[in-house]
Amino acid sequence: MHPLRPSMTVEEAVAFFSSGTNEVQEVYSEENEFIGYLTMESIAVAVHRGELTRPIREFVVTELPSPDTAQPAFSYAQLHAFFQGPLCRIVFNSLYDGVYITDGAGITVFVNQAYQRITGIREEEVLGKHMAYLMEQQIISMSASLETIRTKRPVTLIQTIRQGRRVIVSATPVLSDKGEIMYVISSVRDITELIRMKHELDSQKLWQQSFRENLADPEQEGLEHVVMGPATRPLFKLADKVAKTDAKILLQGETGVGKSMIAKYIHARSSRSGETFMELNCAAIPAHLMEAELFGYEPGSFTGALKQGKVGILESAHRGTLFLDEIGDLPLELQVKLLKVVEENQFMRVGSTQMRHVDVRIITATHRDLAALVREGLFREDLYYRLNIVTFEVPPLRERKEEIVPLLETYLKKFNEKYNEQKTMTLECYEWLSNYHWPGNIRELANLVERLVVTTYHDTIDVGDLPAFLQQVFPASEPTSLKEAVARLERSLIAKAIRTHGTTRAAAEALGISQSAIVQKMKKLQIRVENESI
Image (spheres, rainbow, N blue to C red):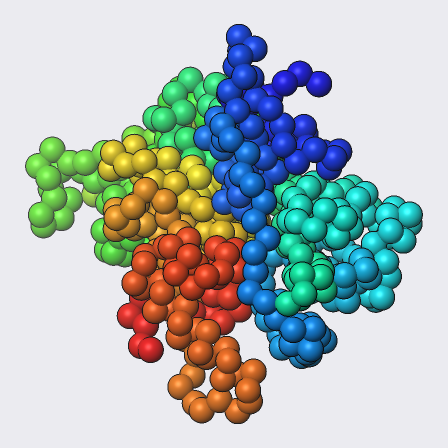
């Protein structure tokens, strides 16, 4: 393979370590001049931080560090009591990263829950098995534990699991007071998932770029924030098909799911794309003003009317598209007039006896159950069937989890440009927000991103910056068990460290644990960051 170049990304450099035999690779400039070394430890740090797209020049060292295996001395009895006791399981099962522990002979004594989640390898498959046996059975490609036992020093390598997943394994020996290896603790982090997330985000950006290139003026159309994922891809495919027709379309879904954006998408792909797109929210205008707003009025039609009269939104959308949002809130008396527009393309202004003709495509949307409103007599059945030629059921954001990260990136870019900022989010923050249920859907997501951009003081947005409403608060009752008491103590210490240091990374350093560990503990303990009472 060609030598590593400083401009390569961390993700590209991972392939050079895939064999696991070399923990150090030399890096050369484009002119083939030696620059320095890239170590597996540096790769592990970059993956741990989620910095897969950073150039490796940021991680190159000119001198190789000498191994440091100095550890506090513990007796055999102390080490055995810990690793064979229940505290070992409690501590390591609380970590986000995988943990694999062997004894000094290479026999598996413990794997935590995170390791089983990451690798798909169950505890009963490996417990009591020698690492050489697992390699023979092709459960793992190589063993960092055996290499550590052989060299008596920490080892970091890339390991391939039987399902084809790749993980970074960092093995550290635990020495007795006599210098003998009693146990080997390996931390395991899945790089396949991180690379998959990055590729999904990259492909989403490519799709958005391709989509914008197919529109004459996407910024004007308001479609620069369109994101398409597996749950909405069939919806957009159908939108492409019906956009070529003038069929009436009803968009149904919760508030904030993007119904307005889909309506704009259909208009942009239709033969009317060069004409006006008008939007009216039927729930935002008082009933007594709705008729004048929608249909317009003649001069002197009512007290307070303009002397010259007014052209309604319907007439303004002539030859274009009219999007009526929250159509379920349209008063019954106006539904009759709208039905005439739908059936005959005709209407009368308020105060007029002259019938006017209009050529407009009507797209409607609602978060309410129109069929139920029809049964209750609150919506005309004939209008319902006229408007409901093609129905789009727009899923809520909690059912479109693949779109959450691309949407976060999209709005982060938007508000960075708006407020002249350069904010980024950590992978832990993306993961946390991906697990949130988003009751306000895309509208809530955009609001949160804008809030974070304008209120955070540093360029990296972390879990500790998220507002309190994203996290639950534990009840203030007395602990009923040792496990609960330990959890509360952890919660108190972590919350205090977050408030003091501002980010999970700084808090983790202060507490002497990894950043991924503190993030996982915050999830498990449901820590409230803002206004926390300790």
